[in-house]
Image 1 (cartoon, rainbow, N blue to C red):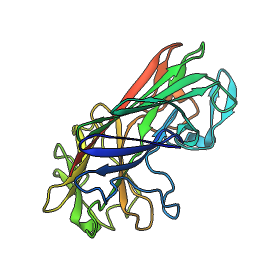
Image 2: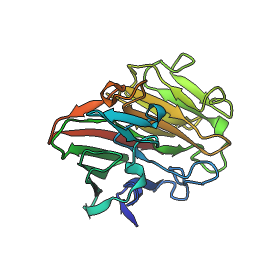
Image 3: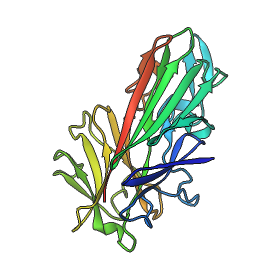
Length: 272
């Protein structure tokens, strides 16, 4: 089921599946979606949240208390389950998922997602809480696909990534976006610690932008699916990969004690 909210600037739709951002539009340009629409021939997702791990676990398994657990998928499983709709206010939507513990992830936990419109900003707060009696290692990341181009009729070459600080992979504070930006690898891992508090997809000439907050995230990636899809991802993660099968040794892992929570916030600013 899809739920929606709006304010004087934006309209937002969110799916119960994965509590995932589904559609975002500016009331200045309501005919133009600002999020990817999930065409399956390129990438069937739109804005998945990554939890309780990011990327693939080496060899598809990890070890906890001497037992091997098979975890063949990447990016956890929050993106693949339906979340209960908790409720709405004038400017927010809240969802919750209760994990009982199973053969993939033995720790019970609660995962809550709240999407809020604040003027021209979409704020998404995700909180995972350890409901087990043992320490639980977790990672949490955002994988939102922003439309590019976001103005109908514009070519992709009319856009670039702008960094708050001059630290793009090619030097300076901008990185051009074209059909060859991701030729060497579909994913560009930015150097850590990232100094820029945000990275935005900006339109040449007009200065219109979609901005992703990146402050206080140890890992930030740029990604685009193969082919010629009209989107790019700016991905802030509390997490990352590592060799081995000990989850506590993976980049950015936070170990939650019983009853403790990890919260991370995604900010998308619409400058249109």
